Length: 236
Image 1: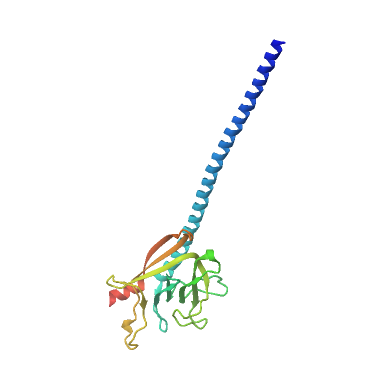
Image 2: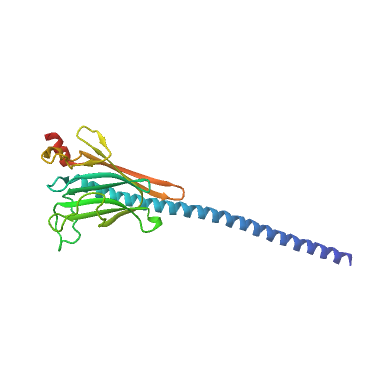
């Protein structure tokens, strides 16, 4: 009888130890799953942030390449001026550009052709809060439709070049390298055409939102040489 009681006691202890081991194993497994989940969540956040920044870099590349090609081909045409304005929207820089250029974009060769166009860039508020500011490009071939007057009061038409912008700034350089916040070829003395001259170079900075809640952004800057402005400066 004593032996039986002893064996029953040993069996109960064995069962208790087995249950404790199972509980410990479950605890360790839960800790492992928790660490894996935290690590995976962090990795997913890094991947998402990398993807979003990649999209921003692509936006900047497309926008700056288009602006560079347009400005590099800028020239002065009778009846149209080169106007660069540095205005503000909601307290943030919102540059606007109006000029003529040979970099007309032909979307459909059946109804369009290369030539000199009146090109403008303007900032407008995005339709959604996540859009930030939107950069709109207008490109109209000269001689096909009535051209609007240049200036900030002109209604905005055209197509979206880039969104999620925090600000756009432009700086203009003359033939001696002096910086100007604005530029205009509108001459006070209309009888003196020599006063109508293009800038030699334009520096454009696009600031894109990364996280609006934390006020973080990425800025991209390029400097474009205007060949017509450089030639005019050398001949002056």
